[in-house]
Length: 70
Image 1 (cartoon, one colour):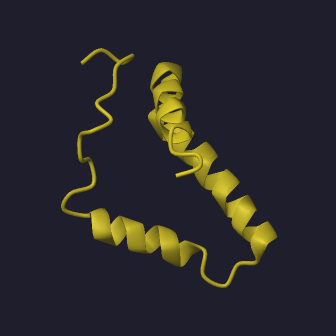
Image 2: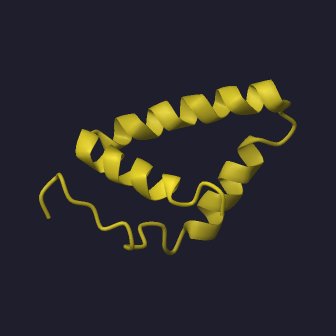
């Protein structure tokens, strides 16, 4: 698959999905709203760096925005 395509339906977390979800939730334990927002911003930037391709980031943002008011 070229680096400008992404399979958003592929499960990249199995068999660790529950562990990853739990770690993300636990990361916010005890944080107030400001600290939580700051952690989210840092995580987003770190994850964007791991993605590394603007086209993939665009596809992820577009997909995430489809769920805005869901």
